[in-house]
Length: 267
Image (cartoon, rainbow, N blue to C red):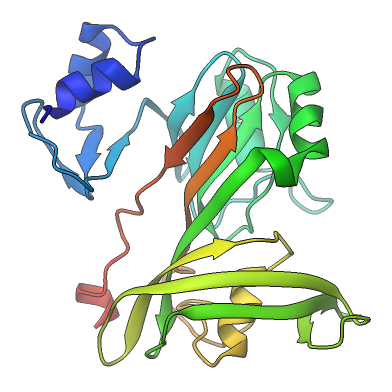
């Protein structure tokens, strides 16, 4: 057994004792979605979520949840673009770039309405290495979603393509689009909704949203593919693991969505 303070000392070697004490004082250490004291004893299966620091810009608060000499990872809020478009240059990338001293290079993206782990490189060469070898170095990409209705755990395979209006469509004709594979496992459910853990083998545009809608359980808040109104899209990138190009070791980033629950608003 180990308490959460010493767990962080072991897993955040670049942070001093005082740095870690400050995290507890500033209410930035969670275990399983709950704020904890420094002496909380961890149990097998506990998920520790640490906010290293926060950036507040207009109405958005960006949590920095991972950082080393080569990468920086954030918890992107729902409703914020990852990178600029022709119509909008107010983005997670832009906010982060204004507030960190390092150079930043976009490694991957999340849909505007999807929250969760977004990872940037501080080195362009490493960014290119990661992107050129994506399927070999990225081991796992996981998402949590609240879907409408009850669902059984399973896997969805179909071919995705964009129509003339840039909406993503699903087909079982391999000549129609690109193969997309989505695995999902039910965590809990009630009469109206299910909380599911999702892992993707492929990273197609809008893949999870289209696939969950395809089986009749669209994601809560997905107005585009499910006509389901809510206060937000309940899709969150909660796990990202990769082979670090420098250490050659697996690096795992977890990000707990603190507002995901079947209780309260989702009843």
